[in-house]
Length: 93
Image (cartoon, one colour):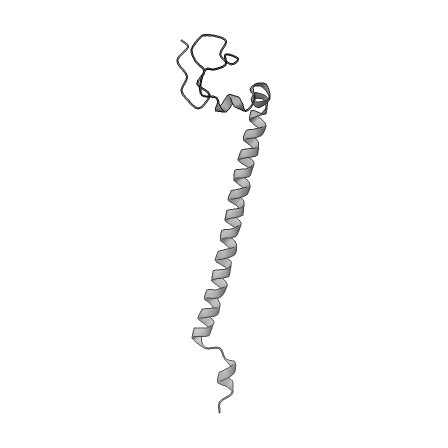
């Protein structure tokens, strides 16, 4: 019996081990990119909230969701209905 052949891994075993290591490396790399994307999106949202804080403090959150001119508190210049920030406003010129 040749005992030395049992100690040397076959070519197929070496390829499987290499594929396994590449698979783990790819998984870790994609997790890093996913976490980086999540951190970037959270940073953008936090930046937007910080920048919008004065307007939110002045007008409140209902300002951004109100779609009809039921209240004239934000439209003191003319009598056209306030459509909210999500819809195009009529021209004032």
